[in-house]
Image (tube, rainbow, N blue to C red; front, side, top):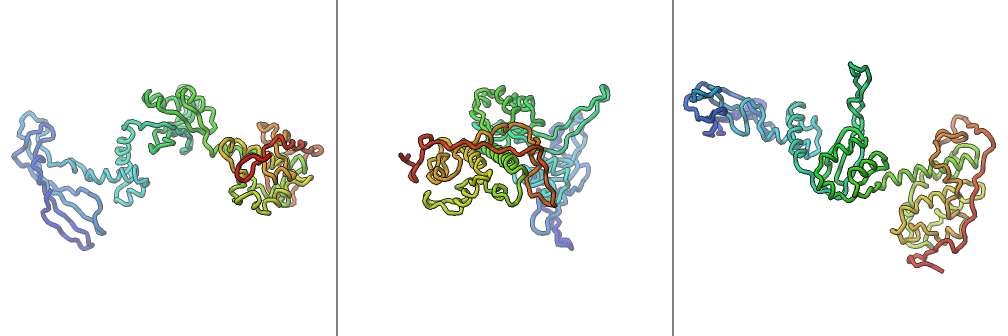
Length: 417
């Protein structure tokens, strides 16, 4: 392209008049023969990337040629270059920039269209073209594969005209496959979250790629685990830390509500110590206070523990359940006496129950709504009380074990006699 002249408009924009400087533009796109006779002229206004504050406006003055090949069905054609094909209103670099903004820069289609002064369908078509380059590329080598579901929109049902039954045509759940250890990002996404959906995506991957996978990180989904056992039999299933902690917190809250209902015969109130500390029970002790040694433990934590361990308080089985649920997270990986599941001297000398009571953890898989349990945990506001059928039951708390049943560690981590 060559510049003929540049005009400055009244609004500050510049109008650039262009002419074709490439000799290959005279070649017929159908037969490839170079034309020598001009048929006419044409003017187009292709759009390019924004430049400057005011922008540029291009006028391309090109010629229309007669094809001198008698057997060519094209007869005539206009000049074109690789950046601006015949009939195109956008340059190739502008279309590529629009697709890369959505694919690589994380911009939305609406924002990219607003920045580049394009329409939404134009940017979406450019993004589909740019995304096709990634989807057609081979998958990177993955050692740890992550599988999780994502909710996407609402389900859609359509009625079969032949049978009259309603069929699910669009599922609201999608399953995503990511590189959990490397930097591969999103590897694939399929509609649905069943065993067949996961196996359908795994069947599209090469066998050598599947054999390279050593671990698969999932949530506690039976469907995903069954699919992994079938499609990746040599991989080790790993449950991510978030869902394990979430399940432990739910179980601790369930034990707290159940113990309060059995001992007090009502649901938790704002004056109950276990209700006041409901948020603190879900925090790690080492996250609340970080003393240098056990002797430097603040008195605030001792008062919190002693208030929980009174004779008529359900805090003893609750604290014992919390300590019991914390043990799987620190087995074999923690030597600090404050963060270790082993007992400390303060714990052994206090009235805390070192082991989980059997009545606190029984029937953990029972339905959530049972006779005598409150509907929710909160204040009994608006002078509303809840009636519990029958006399309240008390929780049987076992006696603490002897000193030989536990290992007491010093601040340095060495066992004490």
